Image (cartoon, rainbow, N blue to C red; front, side, top):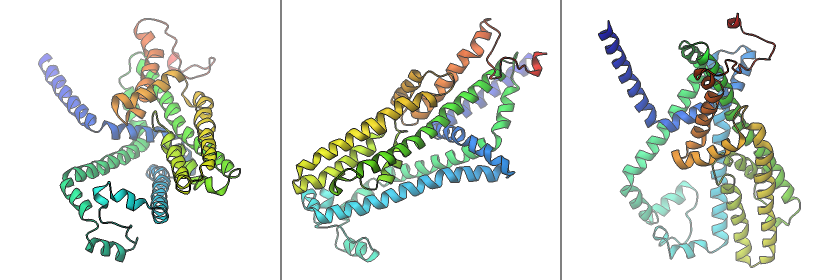
Length: 367
């Protein structure tokens, strides 16, 4: 009998080790999938009031999250290309860059953004340097593109099935219960993760609204030459960029300030740089600093300390990479919840565990 148990245990260990190895290879995609799940779960449950099937609700939630982001990025890319071309046509940028960048040698101006214009530029040999570079790095580029779409597919599939079958997974884990410790820990961890990760989404929305209002207010008070281009889009992108650790929203408003300064420098109107400095001050104080100090404490979870959460957002990407922005807060939430719920009982401490219920309410298991 003991030999059979040992064989089963060994087989189980091998299976768990294999699953763990596979999960480690795609830890970034799985982490983002957990973030998507907890960020959208409340909306998914709210759709249940319409008596829609689970699969329809899950697809609707993922589409409502993915489509606006995809449209936003596509619109931003189109505007970036359009404005860059307008800037290049207005100022002698190509001539200056061609002397220092090998790819631009022999290119006096950008080809027309039409099929005929691109074909004519190709026949003239303007794309030869770029094509040679792409051919030399074809393996790397193919691997990078394939990896991106594979990870995106994993995020979508895992998020979809977590929304549909998350309760079944939770119920399976509760089978390994010992004196209600597992149940208490899972319920508390589930609440804390939802509070933190859903708070991230709310923080993005709040900062986006603040950014739109601040940039439009700035445009109403300054000359047209130093207005923020597309203030609504800039505000929304600032909110999305708040998810990026350390640099955060700076990856949006610093390039905007640079884009506003370049035409001023070419025209020699240096007195207008005062308005650019005022824009940076508005972005840093009104959009970046104040919301972080005011909103973050209310969106940081129920147990997790704000300072610890901020450190997790900072050190997570440094240790784990980009996905550490979500992975480190998840690990912190699980650790804090374990310390509050399971650890005291495992060490024989206070048996009273915070179950999230009112003090005068008891569970059926208490009787």
